[in-house]
Length: 309
Image (cartoon, rainbow, N blue to C red):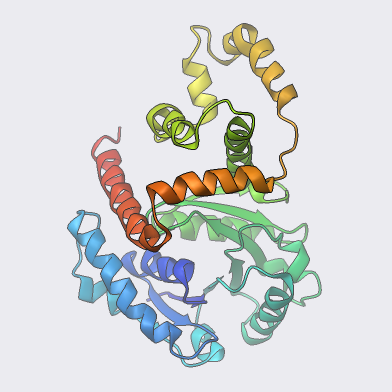
């Protein structure tokens, strides 16, 4: 059985462990904080139970969980692994140190992938002897429910490593996309940043309340975007497709972007949105609402699978 090493047993590490284990791969899970990997097994069991209840896994929960083994040391975690998925702190120095250790421990044929949300691989792999086998494999939270994975290599990443990682991600049920070069924040975060910034601006400028801005997405754009991307959306929004859309709406949409100056998350607007959100959802209930979100995602995934084709 192919072995995967998952380094870091927080939310993302636990999710990756489920992704690989439910696909039939053996997983070794390690965290630098004593006891975290062991405690993660209970949380993984709870999430697997939710997946089973939603009809998204057919195997017994025990069979899937049995493929995940907490490791006592980093060396034990990566021993025999063909792929390492790193989920360490989102800070440059710790990531540089961790990848240096991984590069020392792992044979050259082992792929070293980072789940980082925004640090380019070129910033933490440049001095490594095995830097050609390193890349970013950025998931969407939570990756065991949202399948997209952005694969972003450094300028020196071997194209064969990207291809091999893309094949692995597809094999375990994820949806890999490949960036041809590094960008700040990668692609998904850049798309999200544009929408979130405009949402804050609409509140800041007194155009709409936070609750109604959310409705514009969840009951408007989000319905289409749950099964179509922006290019397919506009292709279907004009009789003549993309070119016709650009002719009809280009001046309007382009003019809007001229008004969309950089947004700096000003404190008064962040405070206003925070106040309204806390009135709707007290801070102590965020964890429960996150679980509700995950169940809704499971239901959506099950529905999309039933409609494929």
